[in-house]
Image (cartoon, rainbow, N blue to C red):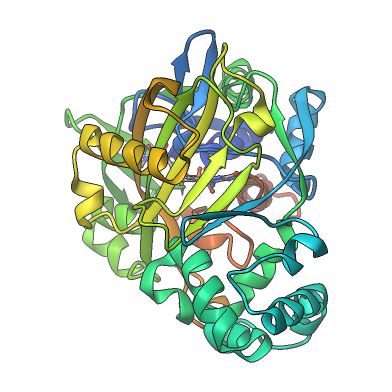
Length: 438
Ligand SMILES: Cc1cc2nc3c(=O)[nH]c(=O)nc-3n(C[C@H](O)[C@H](O)[C@H](O)COP(=O)(O)OP(=O)(O)OC[C@H]3O[C@@H](n4cnc5c(N)ncnc54)[C@H](O)[C@@H]3O)c2cc1C
């Protein structure tokens, strides 16, 4: 009598959107799955906290109409119609002055650039997506590309401080392909979406789907050690407990994975020298709206934050409060990152009051500071060829991390697309295991 081999047991490390989607897909395909999250909450960078009667993301999040993989997932979860779409606008705060930055007329009035540079900016921006096509933007430095197109002054006065805030001093070296992709996703006047009830509704729906399909979810269970063995993989937890599985999908940032990996696995992990930017954000609940612009980069205005996201312009009010996020991308070893939250809250609040003279201290109801150490991989030039493979050579460990979504922008959409790709791969391996074509 022949017996059909049982489907594998897969451990997914990390309960952010990538791990949740991977576990959901595997569980729905009948694979035995255990999702392991180190913190007490699911959602990763999309986690949330309670404010009055609403759940609020620690880090501002929105959906774009081009987020096809995410919208497809929301459709499956019955949540697609819960996304409320709104047209949002952009402002600019430069040298302490506020500007609108949405139309040709706004650009003509944008005094931080000289008149000739404004015209050049407008013409080049209109043609930019076509100008990039066909060129090897992956090996071209962003600075060389943008300087060549827009000229020195636009680069130095606008782009370097604006986009550089995300990557720090290395921004000029990041491949131009990253920015090209980002400009394809975002526009100044853009329709953006936000799910009714917040991102928690998506996280809850995924959790329910995994558990109802027989998957197991473990919270507050940081993996301390990951080894690959002849039979599969072994995970060890803080209390010494171990879990043996057939395969692992790791969604944790690569530098963290390197710390977990045993010696043999560590030597097989490429790309773990990749640098990452972290982020510090402050969520402020105001008693009045601020500008009505969803997104306002802040340049040379004497603030430590370099952008403002007025979430209420998209998501409405939070009880009676208007939610505004301030942010600064920074290295996890920086002085700012190490500073106590209350000191950051006090200083950033004072700076916001200074650059918005109409806002009074009494208008600020509450301030919450959040930090994340691994947000944006700082891609080197030619990263398409260096991007680590999804399958770790000679092991049953698969990687699905933000370092794998390039050249797509790090987003829930790209993490969902990546989880789809990795789970399709596992499904093929499972079919092979039971003797079917992959
Ligand atoms: C300020 C900010 C704004 C953003 N805005 C948007 C936006 O508007 N739209 C959008 O789509 N995206 C946005 N993003 C990006 C988006 O949040 C990320 O791309 C996405 O959440 C990455 O998901 P992930 O599952 O790959 O990683 P993560 O969310 O980082 O999940 C990794 C998980 O692994 C867990 N983990 C780590 N170590 C261990 C361990 N040893 N054991 C077990 N678990 C472990 C972590 O706790 C975490 O839950 C934003 C991000 C930030 C920070």
